[in-house]
Length: 195
Image 1 (spheres, rainbow, N blue to C red):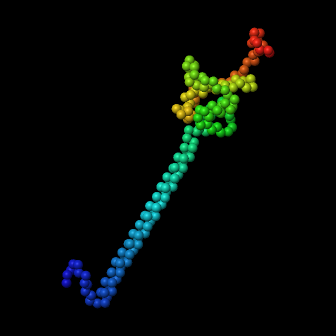
Image 2 (image 1 turned 90 degrees about the vertical axis):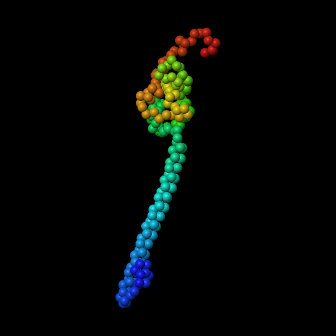
Image 3 (image 1 turned 30 degrees about the vertical axis):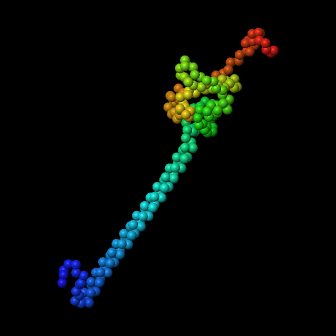
């Protein structure tokens, strides 16, 4: 009889057959358990992979929504911006939220508050070259706000300037009492006006 690759096994008694079959069944049962464990591991791995894909998809959706949300306010500045805060403080806005997007919105807001604008581009005036001056006379007071154009970017959006020294250079505010001038002293008598 061949010792290698011999499919024939001699049995001498019924107990040899029983022992041989027990070994065969034990081997088959072990293989079945290994296959089940491998299948369970594969299923778990597949489930984890699916969960990771779903998390990636949700993360991507959240990122897109975040970008869309931020883009809605791109270039817009709330009152927490130091530039807007400083201007709001000067014009007397103490309560409320000021939402200003750009130069035009700021100037329109100041116009609504009664401020008039006059171009202020005198190169001889050192601290505020290329600036706009806003003024208002009310209740015997003269208010003037000078805003340097450097607080705006190239697209006329308000910059986020945090340094107080820089803000002091870019925004100036003054108020003074209007003197009571006697208009009769100004009349020289040569006017054609009937009054």
